[in-house]
Length: 498
Image 1: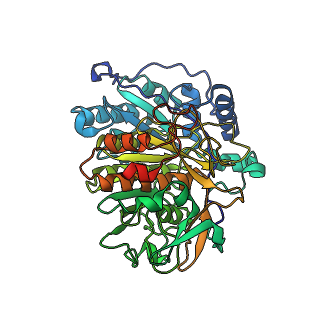
Image 2 (image 1 turned 90 degrees about the horizontal axis):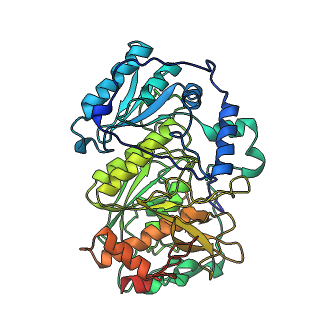
């Protein structure tokens, strides 16, 4: 694929936590003023209007009728976050509160063997079947519910159906399986016979390799998986100067439009985007004439959590939540990179991000990539969360000129040079063995910056997450005063590892 980009909006969801004493377990009297749900077109139009006028959209700030309409139009599935904390282990009343929620649902919906889709083992979060507006109103009055959201409302699928994005966004999935012949000016050959992308010189990465190669550090990549046909991200992960490291491939995505479906479809990339991100972060410093990644001696733990980069639907959002919690529980993982997102915040993903962060993980998320339909938006979800480092791509030799399709904004933490005057992006391994490709947008900027973090942490293995971040900031363009739209800017990696 020539460029792997995604087209998303910025959004924000506000979460509140209250004491269990305020929980209302009894049936409440409600007055329904609108009995019919809004159509999907009406829901999308309202979301768009809110984003354009307020800059962001929140389910928590929406009316009961609006939330119920979206639940109704989304296979009648809702996601509920509850309790005083996102972490079940920190909330002694978790099971009691969950049971009270389910009892309330039964009072309005009736008993059903298919009421609960899932109850997260680590997070105070459940997915339930809801059909009646009265149920939504009653649940939203329960003080121990942090959020109640539609769990399977497909905004982008609806937009494509209505034709609103079709004319301007093209393929919004970020997928592609193309290969490309690399221009000789876009790489430098380094020993033993690897192609170092042009951006490595700009960020002083090649010189930094004299001090660190990422050895001993594990990066978790949440994306669309890794190609089984690319041996340098498989059986030949240790090739050339890349030695003694491991790659672990996992799959937590259910490939079905039906939310009740079960069974993960494996770790193999069926999109191409995840393969490119794994390559940018940690492809081996090989002897085969192929592109090398930033942290060529780091370990990788990859997750196929979604079918593409737009997290639009129950199984994609659930897969990402699971990936964050599993990586949070993986003691060997220090860094998490995710180049995916959504138009609005997703409560269960927020909980997953917070859970991983609470375990000491350093999390990098893409700031956003889009065409004219979404270029009025700033930083996307979940990159704008305080628990993540938001990354965007900039043009060659600049730190404050975003790439033609990249987002910027006050939440950006770092930038990475990934677009040349010629239009070339970053050389990476192709989906297919012995082939190359280019990849662009904030996606590759994010995966590359995660690789930089691995170099810094490998040089200083006893450091904490905050120490690593501080060193990266101190080695960047705008330290100590971040730019209002581009954060600390480009990182001088040699300086960061010295």
